[in-house]
Length: 211
Image (cartoon, rainbow, N blue to C red; front, side, top):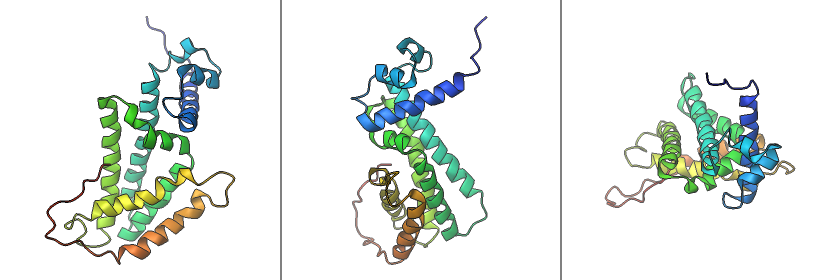
């Protein structure tokens, strides 16, 4: 009979993922070894392999669980009885709150997914595309015609450009926090979206957006 998991299995697994995310965020994928992960967790390398197959699986799991939480936020907001602007504001505020508590995992998602094999990378990127599509739909709901002009996704990507890379300059000891900046992002985005001019309808070639 196979042995069941120890009661501490889940908590140990969470510790491993958190410590690995810290190392990947600070040192990069190539600069981080499984020996370092094991040492950071206070366990032996053989014990580490009881929880994870290899370094790629660590990155895949960190990225997949992070983007899964973002998808969960999208679903929660979509269930709320909100008008268009309030819905997008809520998405922005909740995403930034999620990022505030997951800066290391977010750096792994944005910088280390390229090291994954094709199947794992596509699973992560597929989830990211669903998140982008949800934001694009929320943006399009603000102004009729954005989706028809294929401007809903570019505007959503510009919004992500403001919030996705805040981990590079918001520091725990800094003057501003994610909570401070969330309303600023909302005000900046909503103050400018109405002024966007549509590109000529005759343009035949559009740049692709990789989510």
